[in-house]
Image (cartoon, rainbow, N blue to C red; front, top):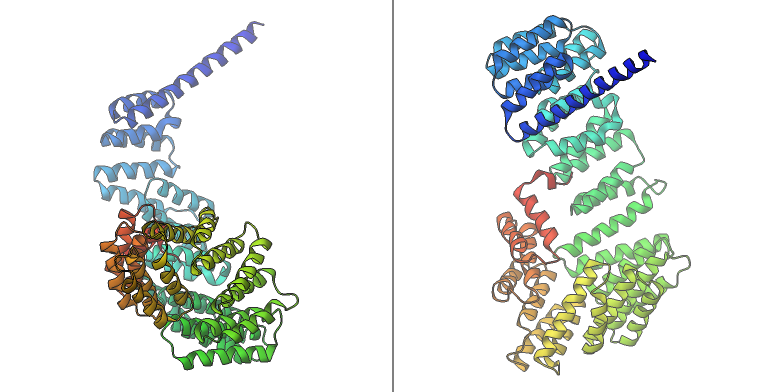
Length: 603
């Protein structure tokens, strides 16, 4: 029983000591955090005397923090004598020498560790880790490099070195390390691309990769991974033709199925590199009808031609040629559920670009009656048919189609889109009260774009009805808006100009300016749209279209007039002057990209 109580007593004493040490440690950390370094040092010194091993590091770094270098060196030397085979104390001594300014003494210690490095992989990793933990990345790298020599294996420690080079932002070293590592570890190519894209800061860095790749391709032309990386490098520099050329060369050499080219063409299209994408799709089509990508490539080829034509200035012959491409496609593959989307695109081309409303209506009626058509595509085609009915001056047919889709797809984007089109139909036809009622419901739509459009149109109606209860001027404006939608710019412009003549002093000044700017942008006359948008931004800065005009100016200067500084000015204005704008997040993102903030650049 006596021995039992003695045991309990010692356990109690031991626990009390540990509790006191923990309390002291917390107190020391608090002193250090408050800038009272000497008080913290006094506690660490006391703890160190109680337990050399456990409190060595905190004591030493407290001594170094108070610039008591001689004492830190003396304490560390004692630990080295006590543990002659443990390199962590040698590294700590080197750190003390470095902070003291005795760089040569520190280097001598480190060089001795490298000289006596054992040919043991685990010990090499441990020693390099100790250097890294002491913020000595350069010697951690040298340890791994020496370890490779000792173990006669240049493939060892790749992950560790890549991480160290990334930490140092040593672009040359990490590039070479990845190029050594990837041929035997090709599954890591995406990781390499992500890492390099965050590390590289401009064309010079990508050129570094390009030249390194070209040298390796020359030495080892059969290594396809280098060719893939070269294609990626060209894409990052937006050298789209070179990217495609490289990918095509690789595809021909491998005689593959073309999957890489097909995906590359999608990327090219997303970057508006339509000519390059078209070349890629043409290559896939040329591989023959038995090719896996013959049909999808042929379809995407025409879609990309559509984008190229309609995104720039085009002639009637361009449109007719595109129409023929779609017709040839439908002749080759037939009109069925697999080609329904091509039928829809052709109908839209005929309706809005060629103004062949009867042909477009007939084609869409055929499309919605196809068996097995995708339900979402069916709904989309019904909405388009409703639009064409509206343009054909059959508003009742249009509202019937819109209402069908709204009923069949409640609480979905396409259902809300149908409701919005119904509201806009009422606006076009002068039924402003009913239109506003529907628009006010849509202001709570889950789609931010629809909600914002509904809000803008609702405000347009309420602002102008308040000024003119008959809505006479607004009815003419709505008619012009419908002509803009129908892509009949000359008629739309004449209608807009007639408003001020018939109703001088109306409240539609900024609305007319915005409509005319949209007309010019529809015709790709971006320079012509600028003064109209500036007039809105400067003279109507608190009106409905002010933030839209400012953002549109930023977009025009960035993407059409190649004036990045002006673009930045307008994006910044959205951020500083229009905090509630729908464009706020996009303006902030674009401003940061133009400013060169690396974290916002997409790889």
